[in-house]
Length: 548
Image 1: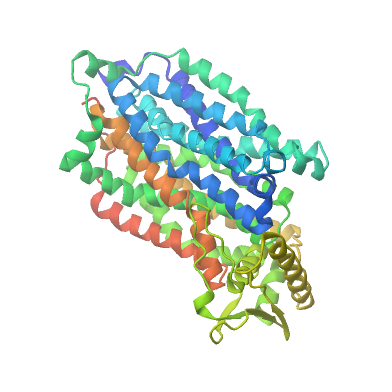
Image 2: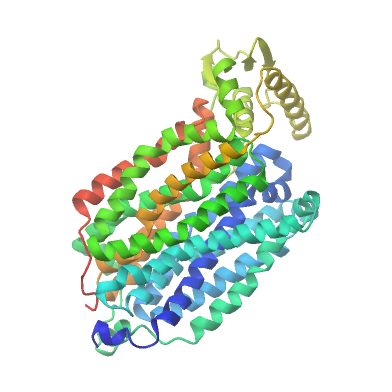
């Protein structure tokens, strides 16, 4: 069966809708959890305090990303051995039920330590299912269309990510508008998770109505389907080289670029620059809606000039613009913070031996030294600082405009005493910072909003340039018999590990250096490496036949 003939059955619009709804669901869940991480942390990690609770929520968020490659292995094998349809019907069901379950999980005040354990378990289950979702959706569409417009057709899968983000923001904004903020923080945050069941029902109904991919059905009928796709993908040198080139050239960079543009910008605006949650959500919604036609434009462009030039442009723009334009974002969204940092710099003076790198991807380490408490508190407030070395075991102090505030040493304190000491330290520090001109919150005017939107749009252009042609490029890289496995595993290592751990890595770098922008070297370096690897090792795939 030729690709042209395969494209006629079923109607391509139904095929795209069936595949894209799962991607909408994936990113809807991603964004509601990421957007509400602060509130979720206050409910499930209330014993840790606001800053550490928020970090724990981000690490729980990352836990779902960590298991994605393992889901890709399991569902990739199902997709390559049993069939594309069966794999992505199961993934949407498990993924949807796990998201829906968050709406009903009891919190720490109700069941204690069992609450975060249950939350982590649900996120792990959800991430495991997502491991098979993207690959199935991209492959199913690509195996139904001709090679001349494969980029544009799979571009709908990529645009569905933006649709999921926009839907999540619309639901959150609508729910916030219907109740007082205290009620939303208490229980209203559960509603966006609960209404996801409607999206699940639609997605499942459409997918169950479809037949198997025509290209996969053909190789299955001819007895050419793989019996050991994982062994073929990793055990054959050519396949392994292509997987590694895709991982380090495109996918690791896509993970960090996309999450920087679509997620870290929200964290930076709300948690660092102290823009209100409602203002931040509206800003992100505006640029997300503006991104939707860009996916289709760049996907279409990749059918005309090639996948590689479009993706290289996104990688280069990311590497060049992230650090200077985040600095510009500070000037636009919280100019008072920029002025205060320039005129009244903050210094943390401590024994370097008692200062940790606060990176803990599994959330078990407790950072109790006074130096760590001082740095995590300042980082949580979005206040930049300099580091100064003190003598051995000297007390850690924070200096600002002549005032000195000593941080508590928590290594010998019980939980209650430490919580009280942190609260007192926080209050004294906020008073000293306020007296030095550091704003408690951003005050954004119309001019600042316009400037912030243009800056955010640059980030979105970089992300969509890289992401839009990606599905077609990945499908075209691998043979049909191992396509599901060979595509899904590197995709979820890149997105899940390099991208999913971005918030924790950026926080650790910022907390260690005191520079609000130093953590951005992580996505910049990964983007630069991706540019070089893609330029040299990733082949151009536009126009390839994929029925082999």
